[in-house]
Amino acid sequence: MAHERMVSVLVADLESWTVPTVAKEGELRDLVARRMSDVLVGDPEWRAYQVLCEGTDLRDGLRQIVPMHIFGGSFWPDITVIGRDASEPIMAVEVKLPTGTNPGPIATAIGQALCYRHGKPYVGSGRKRACEGTPYPWVVTFIVDRRRDSSITMERTPLEDQRFREWLWGQQIALVVRDERSTMALNPYP
Image (cartoon, rainbow, N blue to C red; front, side):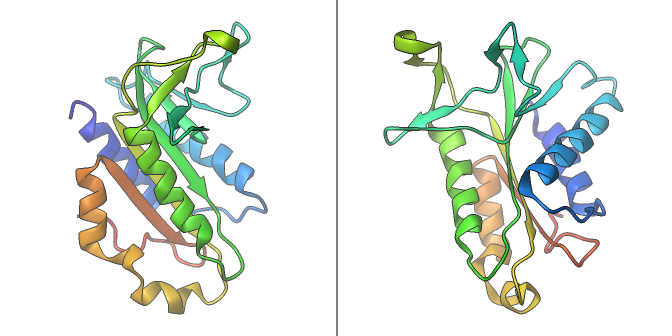
């Protein structure tokens, strides 16, 4: 668990961050990527690490974010943290901004996190694509809940269940759930 301290620091920062109001999930993704990058740059040990998200992950015309292949499909994380050596993926980040009353995006985010941890990297291009290597060592799932009545429904859902979050942490998946109206995370990690 070489990067557990970095993940813990990033998760603690996301749990205490005052999340700005945004209109779209893509805006939130970009803000989270910028926030994570600022945290990494502030620590000399992690300064050389890169935070990539859609639109910032091209190098020599090739995408640097590596999708995971599982169950016949490819799953692309919203954000990837890579190490000093660009071929060393450290963390995948999934960002969700659920609205309305549907809990589907929350389930999707957790399912995608499991795919990032247990799939195979899908590398190469065209017919030369292959599934090889190891999955992302860590995944952070960042959810800002905008669903109507989320303050009521979030009180009794398994999403807040500490045992579930501990189980996810054992899978090297950090789950950060924020209510848009709150300045702190729901049940932050100790």
